[in-house]
Image (cartoon, rainbow, N blue to C red; front, side):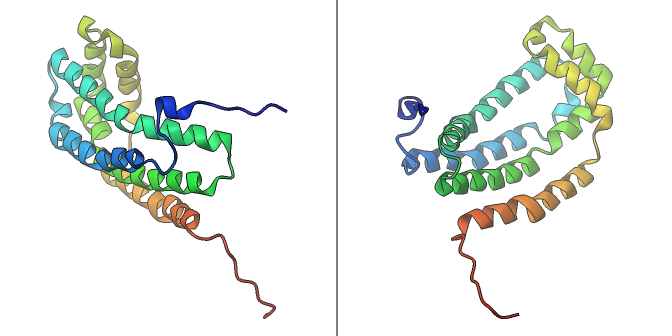
Amino acid sequence: MPTTTWNLPQYFYDSLTDPRIDADIATWLPITREFADRYRGKIKTFTAPEEVLEYYEYSETLSMVGKKTMHYLSYLSSLDTQDTEVQKKLGELEYLGIQLAELTLFVSQEWKELGADSIRNFSESPLLVAYKNDLVQQADTVQYLLGEDVELALTKKSRALGIFGLHEELRSSFEFPWTDEK
């Protein structure tokens, strides 16, 4: 059976130990904090399509920060699902993702405060044609959002129960002591 091979270094990193991976990951938290500082309290006050366009363009830049690393690790994992070093790194990133989610939790809440009607009005702007589908989806779903305090509690609970435990498990040696004692 033929094996799959990709030239990952051509587009991503030389190896899992490439220092550029950790350097790229180190930018995620500061960039997300900058985004939060820039937009907290502003989304709910958008009145002009230009403001929404600037938000989307900045948001796209933010989302690109982690994609290179995540794609690389995903491809490595696809090539060898049993590679524990790749799984450890993915666990670390999942843990970091929860931290980033906590920082940006305000975004959906502010869209909710802005209101479905305002969001739909923005979706009709010729300036925002590239974002129309996202805006319509936002308008359709804001009514179902839980309060920010509830969302934060759920995020923290997932961190405490699921991801953090998985992250720690993946960092462990996978050795389980065995005794005959009952």
